[in-house]
Picture: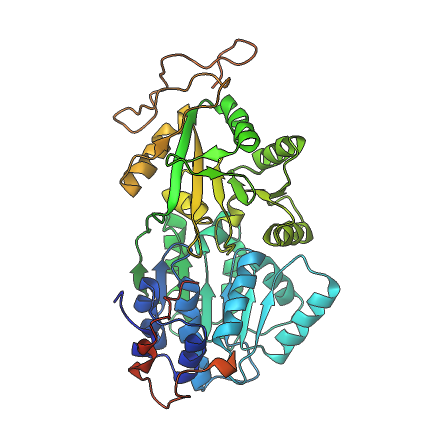
Length: 459
């Protein structure tokens, strides 16, 4: 299935035309597994990390079905839920490319943090009956409470990054939306059972299992294993005590960073990740005092502030972004040279998501993780997953001695080292014209594969 080409699937020719123009030829594993199942009408529970092509895995078959016809023209036919505005925007952008040759299929992205003009545009599109609505839960609930949309004739209900939505506290909103979609004629229980329902999640904790059991009807379970980080990412770590982390970070920004192979990097395009928003604020403030051109991205910012910092970072007006994991998923920025994990992610997949922001689009990249003595056990799990020992950097001069990199048999850090770190106080510290060759053809021909420049689709 990994070598499946798009023209070997059940996708219609209009979708294949768009894929040809976009230079997409081969399916990723999640696309190969899901596209035909969705076209055949199955509910899907998909487990796949960001970057595996899951957006296209559900968008392409749904758009193909809508284009084939048989759906009401004055109704919302497909509702796609996303946890953040950034992901909703990314899905909407993919939608515009995939639907280029589709007539009569409209879409609208619905998310919070906009001015009145944007709200009016959303309202007009919803009342007209946009074919596809891409929405964050909170904003959609607002429109529902105002009576701005009718979901009673919905045919496709899709939850993207369902685990992230639950982590962000959207469980009640999701269920409120689901109850508006329809009623199971056999049981009378409210829920989207008359809809084809598709869920994607990067992880499968108990709360996602419960949600899937509630919303899905005889689903096909598709699980794509977490892929290891790209080989071209040069991974390394500093093993240290927690109070040493900020001095290490400051040293990296003052002196640059030299990899194990001797390659030198300046800190011109970097993302620093931390799992806590308060720590993000502290790191950002400390770097600003050093004169670093940086900005912070976290959930305390208003939507307008988040949009502004992301725009300035993408445009190169801000060189370093300090962020929580809100940026690790669903954001495509191709020129990141370095990712620094200020803390060790507890979830291996979060580590892969974070460092996967660098070494994109055939570029090289560096990933550095600051590993405190009480995080060693978590970092060893990451090393076991990627099946290699990540290079340990020598601590910068004047920082003090590092703890011993040692884990007990139970997987927890031993907490022992040759010398305990002591702080300053001495105490212990812890386009359409570019169509297919030979013009459009009426069937799915193998001619698409003759052009070797086509790439695997990886949205």
